[in-house]
Image (tube, rainbow, N blue to C red):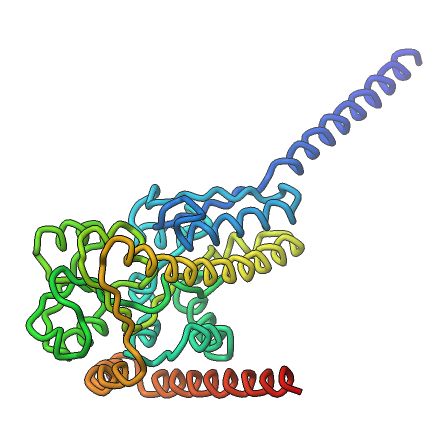
Length: 360
């Protein structure tokens, strides 16, 4: 009898201890944060790059609003490999997120090349409204269907593009004739440059500085804000034409997101929206700042007005549009133009309403 009582006592004690240790271990597991690794192509300083700034905003928002439940680790300056490699790692789930420039994004979604239709956006706000509206949602759905990646934001990569030149200013289309211009790996931009009688040279970003410095090319075209990255050291002239737009995308692994608790999912989506706003603001800030820096460095800055932009548009828009109609179809091109027209109309209506309200 005593043995039975002792056995029961030991059994109860053992079960109690087992439950106790299970609870402790569960508590430790619950306190262990979910790791979210994001690969970035840009520099890591948030005051010097729009991706770095938006990444810091995303990290801060997620970590604070999950109370440390998710820990965001940012790997800047291609620490994890090329942009294409970072995208592939995100698709495989090796890392959880990637930021990707539009030139590389077109390898996954050719439809993104629509932003390279010359002189289609009259202002940054038009581009923002297009990608925040129904057309942007259509593109988001395409990301999911084609890649299995979830687009947390579709934002800016320095905004509108400009020319940087070694020996000659670009005032009008004929000024480009016979020159060799570095371009990213984009067929649309190649066609744009060729339409002006110039020779495009698809040179990697890492070789751009030396290519201009040594005269391999006469100049280049990049997003205006990107001139900030020491390119002002190798040019004498900058022409702010805004000939095309440029974008950045923050994409995350779908399976990883689906396994998050619902409250964490909400935080991640909200953080993406906050990061998009920071990205756009920082992109425009750097574009404005570089204009002042160029002038201090004795780089002649020319900003094309609407009449000059129209000259450029008449020559370059149709060749790129025709190429894209063949590549991605009339429907996508027509929808894009419709979204742009609607955005312009909405902006005009909003401005007129404000004028009326402010002058009552």
